[in-house]
Length: 521
Image 1 (spheres, one colour):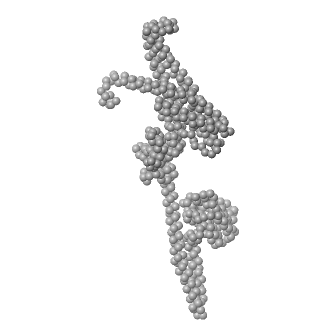
Image 2 (tube, helix red, strand yellow):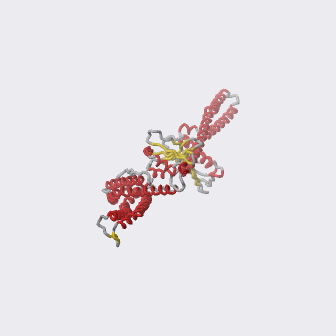
Image 3 (cartoon, helix red, strand yellow):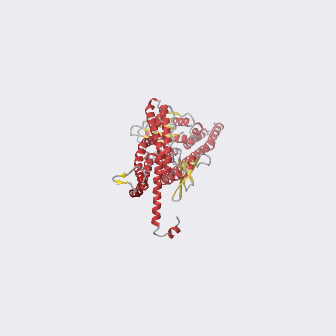
């Protein structure tokens, strides 16, 4: 009705029209409740053998012979629940989402039986069907009482006015035209009672049906699980929109590509206060009921917006971790380049100079200059040794060329105390992982030689699943403090760039154990 029509309507007519509209709505609800009760009678009758079959199959599944019966009864129960859901949505406006299918089971009969018996949603459906016959019978009795009163009053009224029928008295009163008119007049309140009764049944039936068939939305539960249960799509996912980056990400902050048309998947946008916050990626079959998906999206927009903030933070952390890893990798690349430049440039020149000095010593033999040349050769050899040590400290060439085991073996050979090594790595690792493990061992052995006052140490490197475990232990004085500037703090940061962790056990007087775990899928 337009605003102009309402304005032109006399004020005295408005309450009557409103009352008429309200009566029409009440009659419609009463009729819908009657239709639902009528159409639900076959469901209530078929529910009895379906539930009995489910219970019998569950009881016999322990010995295996009940599994076929359990499968058939489970499918029958879900089929009846689907029919009940369609009737409830059509006549009661319950708005119940699609019923979830039976969970896929794998393995032997025992595994399948356990999967079916542990499906809580199935037992909710079974409880609804078990109560359905009694509920239908009880509500039918409640509904039939005012209907029978109305039918009796109408029948007696017609018989009294027409003077026909077998009834002569109604209680102490003789049935005639006068009493017939009274009985016909009583049909009006009787009809109102029928409408009121069925309207109340409409609310009761809608409430009961929602309680059993609608998914339970647990407050604060994960958004993805709630949407999957609400939409009946276990493969549903949520892509969160980051406006500053103009891209979608998952809950871990990784980029997400929305499905293309024809892929069998589609997506529905989620907006809050007029701004995009996410996209619900779901089965394309649900696109035939967009109202259901849009209703679920609108109901969960606040929770999705909160999850989007978490995804934004996760994306920023992921970007920070990636940038820190790139910085470390760039530093390692620069170290390797400097080491190559020293090896191919300065070291080769010094080696060439040492050869020339030896040749010069041969030429000046007997002139008395041999001692001076020997002194220069020793100083040159010392400078060359220092340069090689510096090059190894920058980035050892043996690590780049031969891998972790030879590089750690070279560290142990240069140690000032006996160092036992056991490196069980069957292949080359990622350069960043090898560098992190090597420099951890190098720094730890440097600390052992300088501060631990140890008589021996050992280095163990082994693969543990998808991790590389590095252990450096000594029998020194212990008492290592990360906050005392031991150099291990920087190694913790380096390990963090590759997702590794470092733990230290260093009680005073009992040696030190450094244990690092580095992911290496």
